Length: 456
Image (cartoon, rainbow, N blue to C red; front, side, top):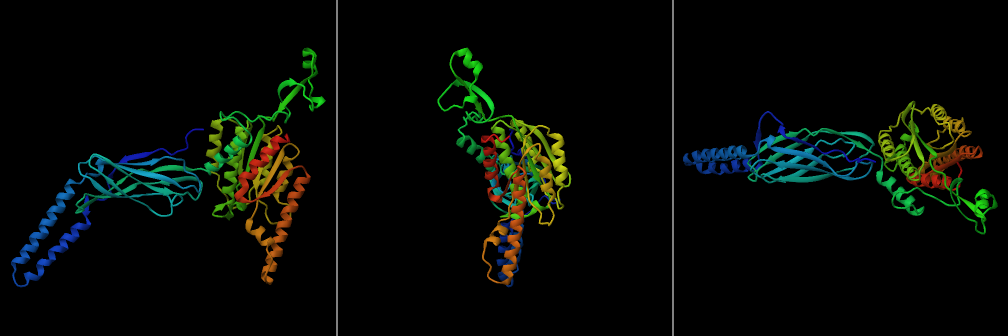
């Protein structure tokens, strides 16, 4: 997978205002210091002339300080990135100023950052020596996935005298993409590598004696099943030879993500869709490392993101890019349309991991009907993102009449959700309700169980 780190942006500064400069804080201090001549000037007018001379001297010093400040075009500003931008993950952004003038400058910089990346303005203090450079950093913590826009870096700089100052701005407008939690996906990949004893060189997972894909031949050992004996090889070698199998590879795994209104609910600061996208990325990375082909279908009222099943690092990059721009909608998703699209495009049997939620309705939700359409042809892992508050309310003991009504309503909703999932299990699906915070881990474990048991 190619680098996901945003490109560095750099540009020469330009004058930000029509007037080239302004007054620094020390200018006003020195100017007010000249007022001490007013008292003696009441008795001797010559002190008034002294005050005027002092003020003229301060103004001349200000003009000299302004003149020797570097011109805006002598400052080159760069925005530097070192890590990919991921949802709810804190990362550093550096702003570098290269001073091509002769005088050291003290700079107050403000980076125009989208509110989705950082709630407060990104204010920095940078010192850049003459002919040198200065650097400072601020942190961002994205609150939503997708593309975020950054604008110009505004500069206000002074020399060491602090008599005069200039204003400038560097046009560093760029668009950066906020990805799902990449660290979480990496942790689950490491988990797979360790727990399943995969070699560090990214070899495929192999479980001898399990699965139905032929791997090799070996001599018969006590305890081997007679049906696994290869009689043709045994006849050639004059002794019993057993077939060794491994977990099937190159199977198709389709991840279906519901982006409808139900996934807009927020749990612990993130939407259910954010948890679903993070889990989808974790599962996709683990499945690709296991040798399977992974496809993606994210849908709302229409099919939004669709990536055919494939494998390889370039394919993983395509999945990451598409998952980053999955957006929730304010309407109920077209579940039946998503099921029909998948049935028509994927003819061979595959594992369909459907991440969704259930609407509270007296009728059977459309998403359940859509899962029924897939079951005759595919193995469906139906994942419902649970509501921790609802589960907690159903388990607590009510203290008053109002609490009793809430408790009964919560129990009824929990019972109905479990009833719908039980019906799916009776028809052959692997149906589970999972907590948002444990969704990624649960999906990876269920996928590995499917592979070990050769359910496909």
